[in-house]
Amino acid sequence: MNTPALLAAHGLCFSRDDDRVFGPLEFHVDTGEALLVQGDNGAGKTTLLRVLAGLLRPSAGRVEIDGRAASTAERARFVAYLGHLPAMKPDLDALQNLHFLCGLHGRRARQMPGNALAVVGLAGHEDTLVRHLSAGQKRRLALARMWLSPAPLWLLDEPYANLDLEGINLVNRMISAHLRGGGAALVTTHGAYAAPPVRTRQLQLALPQAAA
Image (cartoon, rainbow, N blue to C red; front, side):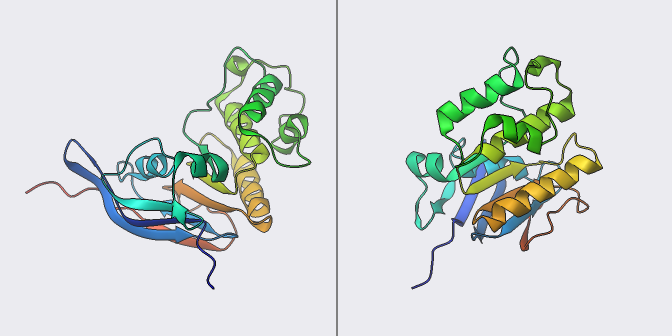
């Protein structure tokens, strides 16, 4: 019997004010695999990830996780989402934020917040308030949260943003390790230079066509 895809989309569409943003889309992501979603600004990459994460309702089609309809419970169990904003409390320090998020979402076995900060290059910033971190450091802190997540499916929206070359390499190493551990990732980018060196397929989104 075939193993179901970790994530699958069938006829997936999203419209805003009767204007089609994307779709219909058909794709899937298997364990040990990354799907690279590319397209110009305005092509719907962020909107697609928000639909997959359950933050927006699709106009048509369906999303399946591990062969089942993507309910709120399934998403909470399987999906970790990295958006454009760091989603951290600015008046808590880096370590407090990670402990708080682990309390909400759990954490991977044998992984601790302090170790995750070291993995992303923020050792020594445990007591730094998030509002005092640079944009690149906030992105690294958000990556530490992903590293701690027990969810097998990572939805990463422009994970290379605000990172230098070393930071880009860090993202690639994290994705590679996640996939080796049986996870999967869906990564949006509009720069072909930034792509994880793993088994990767591509999904190209086009800008919506103007109405005639």
